[in-house]
Image 1 (tube, rainbow, N blue to C red):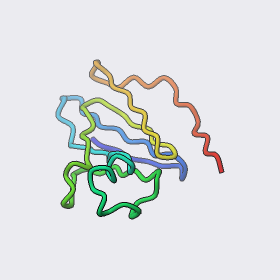
Image 2: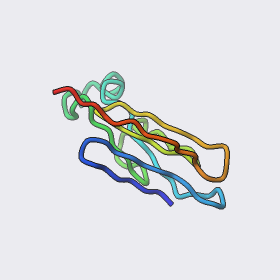
Image 3: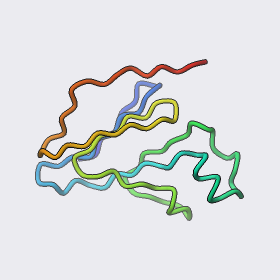
Length: 102
């Protein structure tokens, strides 16, 4: 299973399967790194833009990073944190709140 949810400030995504064969899940690189490699598209994404997708698409294949099996992501204000479990089930004990400065 892959799952993505958002509270409007944060994005949470999970890739998990009890048999170890979860469907694919990808997240985008940060915009700054993407612009370094592709200056022709600079300014088309906001500085904190991140995408989470089931399959990478488009002509910029180097934009996508595969989320490993039994992993979860939390994206907040462009910052990405991940957790990974060596057990068959991801162990998530607590998730801190996102603080966005205005």
